[in-house]
Length: 219
Image (cartoon, rainbow, N blue to C red):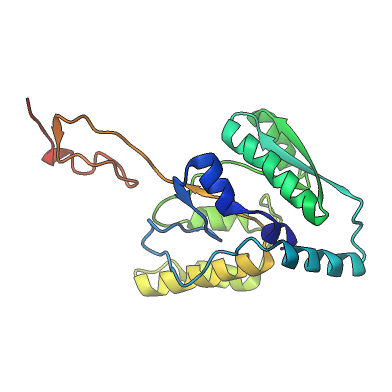
């Protein structure tokens, strides 16, 4: 949680992605039907991060330990962001060594859980993130984190009641925000372009071809 408080995600979003995205905690972005805006993303708070680190040291955490942070060499934008993250965490007393590796090597490290921190560019389904939650928040998943309340809430999402689904995902995201088994650095906005001659075509996160029967080409 100290790491979460110590990352200035809004600055990363504005500085490296020109604001083309959003910061969230958990598995849902604002484009999803089950998103609940009542869950406010954790704000950058280095003083709170330092306080939590002091508590961790008092509980026996070794502050001289260097955490190995593995990232994908194929994402140069996040590569820059990772260096920024390491620098900001260094300011609060968390030592980070960034390791930039190819995707195959990253998957090997992830599969063997041979990391302290790792980052992967993950695509969530814009509707129901059930498979992702079920995999990532499990003993066998990359986080190695499992929570009985999350298991129950996730099972309860498998219904046609939209309000119930939204409430159960809110429960899951609140626990993720509190326990921090994983951190969402940022969500990238889907972007698309349409030729001026193409009428009724609008780029859409759910698929730009969903209304292709309405398209017209004009001279």
